[in-house]
Image (cartoon, rainbow, N blue to C red):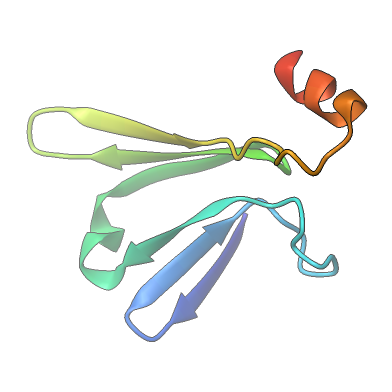
Length: 82
């Protein structure tokens, strides 16, 4: 997990710091909501989940950016097979 504090926000990202962040996904979380984060999981560089706790329920946010139309058919097929 990459977590960076940026002013009053934190960045949770699936990308590696050594890369150009061209395939990563993530969440910007406001400082007031950081106390509600229960877990952050990275499935791969294109899929990550942020689990939040609330008073009466928990919530899981899933971030999966789809390839754009500029990508090859092979990349689109690979994405759809996940």
